[in-house]
Length: 303
Image 1: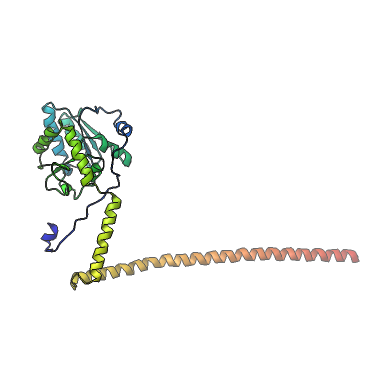
Image 2: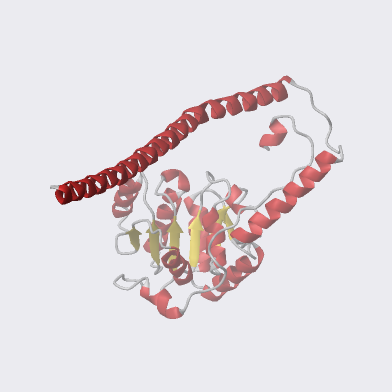
């Protein structure tokens, strides 16, 4: 839509992002260990959010929906992992909604294996964000066979098929609550959709890079064959001039480094010469002392 709004009418290809989490589940011991010490019964559905604690991520939608479910007597647990400038406000709002016994807030985790364990431990990933372009967390969750609840039409929902590799809602708490009300009693359905997500939307980082390389090769080949129309606009001239200016700046920046390297080399050579002179002087002094010693011996014989 942004390209069309700028006047672009040609074809385009979307290059999906890859993630650095391998596909597949962790051993059950590692999965169980990650939630030790928390009130997360295995027979109670576990919902998960991983990301920055910001309201624009749709966190209010999640909390308001959970409030409705708790009021209806549905049992569940919700884990938030992350931090952000709205973190304290989000926690306070959860307390205001009396969700303290259902919701757990954990600090950000940079250990990929622990994050994998949480994805494997959860039954459903909640990501009602319309701000993110193509949330990597959705594909990370898919790597571990975890299905996501997403806002229909959002960038995060691209490549996801509603009811097959994920679940779509409208951007409001009522829609989220209705979806969770339907899914929480159906854990087998959530697992099946999660497996579909792993097969259909998961892309490894290596695969993503390989796809990008192949696409660049096609673009370069098309350019060499003259398939792309020649352009002669002020924008091209500006970009070319900017590139040349940056090249000059980089060369100027390199001059002090080159001078410093030359000076350092001269200093090292000068130090080597001084050291050599000192060694030569030591040898000359030793030779002179030997000559003086022989001279004294001769004088002693004559005396």
